[in-house]
Length: 123
Ligand SMILES: [Zn+2]
Ligand SMILES: [Zn+2]
Image (cartoon, rainbow, N blue to C red; front, side, top):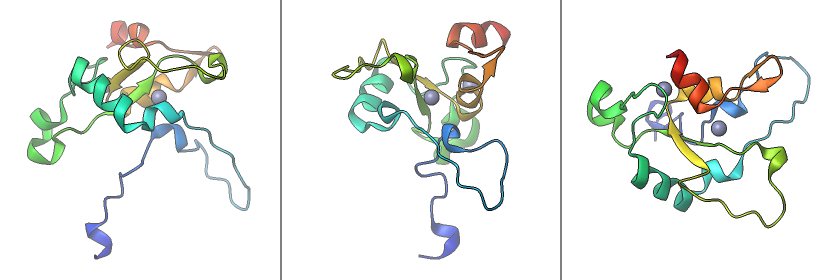
């Protein structure tokens, strides 16, 4: 496979991208495992569909065949609130969002993460 045939977006989540590039420094990143669980993800998408629940973007409608089934899945419950033995509810706890809205959900405003509802009202 040539370099250009590799799917560079595979396994890409905005949560994992550090905001600054720091040379020679080791940076630890955290990602919510539920956002990557394929079964939870499938159930979530079966319920909500593949359009972004914040801005309604549907990748297939916008980009054609290449965008088919592309969407990120965000976990609504903040990681620090997750206790041991917690079981994810794919409809209550997960939500499909586009990478732009997903990145915004992981940013903080005045030290607080925005919710899907907050973001939707701004759109
Ligand atoms: Zn969106
Ligand atoms: Zn997320």
